[in-house]
Length: 229
Image 1 (spheres, rainbow, N blue to C red):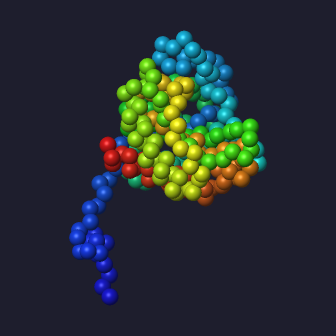
Image 2: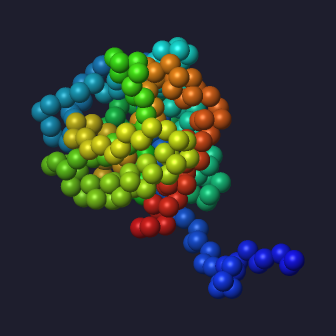
């Protein structure tokens, strides 16, 4: 039996080779080693303020801080995107930084990123809560121009990462109160990759193989989004 030509469909029709994805992606591993409770406006010109960087959650089973877990996954995502030919800008590559949420958005803005993806893990008082959600900017006085493309990116990336991991699908959620969204001028999403307050999910989130599944899923979704523009 002859080996089928990979560029020809079973019906004998040539198949289209996907165009290589190009673009700039800014990855923000949420939080940092030490929180900064200093206040900053929740958006440009806002009277309301929030802490510059919250402390994040911590693994109930592993004891690992969220900032460390999300950095490990972010570095894997960086590698996956670079292997696919995407230019990556990292907000941080170490724990020992102090970068306010507005400054994180500014890094993405200054890079003219095609997507600003922020990686976090969830926490809840109820240890049985689990699953993955993706947050997007709600429409407000700052976010209007990025709401549409952010939602498109979120839908694509969320679907891809749920498929890659089998995580419980907690959906795409709009938020108007996040400084990192309100200061952004480029499409932005925030993936809450699972609950570190759930012992089983905490263990998974700190397992290298599962971290790679998360990175693979997000990378595939990002590539699909970049091609769709």
